[in-house]
Amino acid sequence: MLDLVISSKNKNDSRNGNVNDYDPYKHRKPEHPTTNFETFAHFVKGCVGTGLLAMPQAFSNAGYIVGIIGTIAVGVIAIFCMHILIGCMYILAKREKVPFLTYPNAMRIAFKTGPPFLRFLAPSAGYIVNWLLSIYHSGICCIYVVFIASTIKQLIDYYLIDFDIRIHMAIIILPLVLIYNIRDLKNLAPFSTVANILMCIGLSVILYYIFRDIPPISERDMFVDISKFPLFFGTTLFALESVGVIIALEQNMETPKDFLGYFGVMNRGAVVVLTLYGVFGFFGYWRYGDDALGSITLNIPKNDVLAQVVKAMFALAMYFTYPLQGYVPIDIIWYQYLSKKLQDHPRKKLIEFSIRLGIVMCTFLAAVAIPNIGLFLALIGAFCLTLLGIAFPALIEVCTRFQDRDYGRFNYILYKCAALILFAVVGLFIGTYTAIHDIVIFYSNPIGET
Image (tube, rainbow, N blue to C red; front, side, top):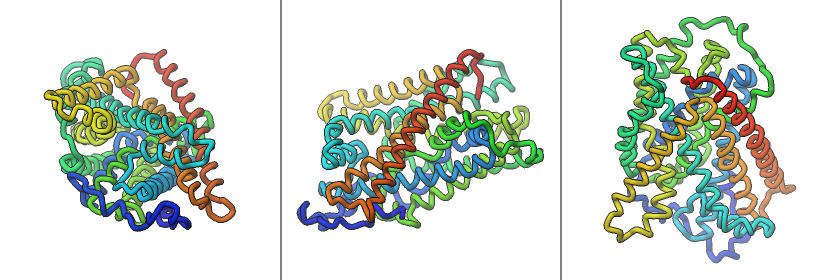
């Protein structure tokens, strides 16, 4: 079922000229193509980050039964929608006879050729997608700033002196600027591989701490107050979705046909990611319960040398991942909008550096404003990813299939897309409201590290 979009044939391709004669995959020429293994490494690293470490706290907002079922459900929906999106982008690229389409262009073209009542949205659709993508991936970078600074603060507080977390955020600006000036995914691949190794070692040690003094499961709740569920939903969706990075990975592959499919790179990566999230959410909540912080690394002992090493490893892994998540906003702002206009400008490289510096500074300022990992995760997940990861792919499929009126038997695809859109809209409003409400409450208390 997950391949349905890309494998289905258009019944009336003759309307578009010999569209089946054009294969977008054969015309792609990425400057630095990535292998299947490199793409897999990028996928896992792009999806396994601070979201994984926040899953115990997410489970505390759901209970361990609802947490397990909810994680699987949100993960399946997220990956299913990514299959829909990438499959429709391939079909639209085939119709347009171009190697690939960006998410914004796919949205614009889909609306332009979709049902008449949606066509008025076509001119603004691309800008909306770019705006949301930039907010989302910049938000991830903000969370990385908070995470790295929180980890360093714990170590410095223990060995040296207690500084405000915002001072630690300011200290890491220069290192972030330096690594953020690595310009392409091919050169970032070694950093992703190293980050994955550090994450694997660190997660193994965290499991040791989880199981060392684990209490009886009877002390934990199977279900909690439903009013907390929106925070679980936002955090989990944020953790499992990385739409901009996933699209960029597929478009930079040496063999893009291997990305989709039942045993494609994305599904294999999704199985690994979903398993990790379920395991760490469940056992992390079992161990720490309602005391689970925005990152489980903040729960493990502060005075244990092994724990301190693990925290440093995670901070380094997040540092290596920062430019991968930051690839999307710089791609949108610089490569899509400004680079071509400044092609012959004598200070083009200086301008690009200034923009990269500006993005890092914006992530720093936002991190200072909301230095709470858990609330930041829930807000970004509920606001951006319900639209980018669920509602928009469903809308694009409705529009893409409109040209051939190919909605399946009994128009089941229309009903499926309508259900996804409704689910996304409800999650958007309830999740965003709950996250903002809790942020307001957070500001009534002293700034913490969670």
